[in-house]
Length: 212
Image 1 (cartoon, rainbow, N blue to C red):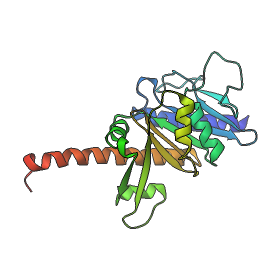
Image 2: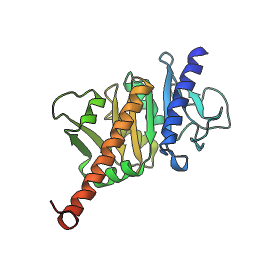
Image 3: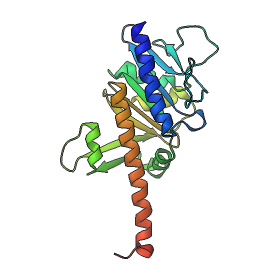
Image 4: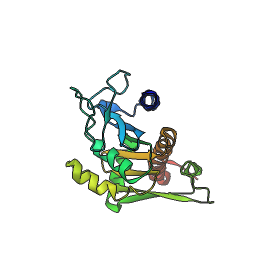
């Protein structure tokens, strides 16, 4: 039980930090954290809850099929299956999914390419890439309404203990070995998305608005 409480509190703290950034608009987004490996058990966001508030109904404990362990009127997040794919195919301990304006715009701008690559940004070190002029790529998949179909597209990119996937006009899912690692990666990706959009905006202004 102590592990359950520890993991609950850990995920609750991450939720509070992301809520302060206003990354859970309209009850969107979901979070999970692994409680045990054998059998697989993890806490996942309850569906439809205001994630800017902290309550005893924030998370549900689910099994290796993504089903709630205890009978409840609450339902696990509709995207629990994506979190399940992460825990079944990697040694990750936490998975986070948020919808932001920046990640949605980036996913639409680069969706036809199926990916976007960032190069030479100092914050790439947050992903453990220390090469000079290093680069990192995030895949972009289509936003299938059918969750099993979405999970199938998603899982083809779930092959490392740390990673991220953009879902077109939907949001980003990141995962890491710990809640801290997952949150760090999420923050780094959102930094890169924001940077790219600002850069594109300035490039559009340069010919007529800025004299250099």
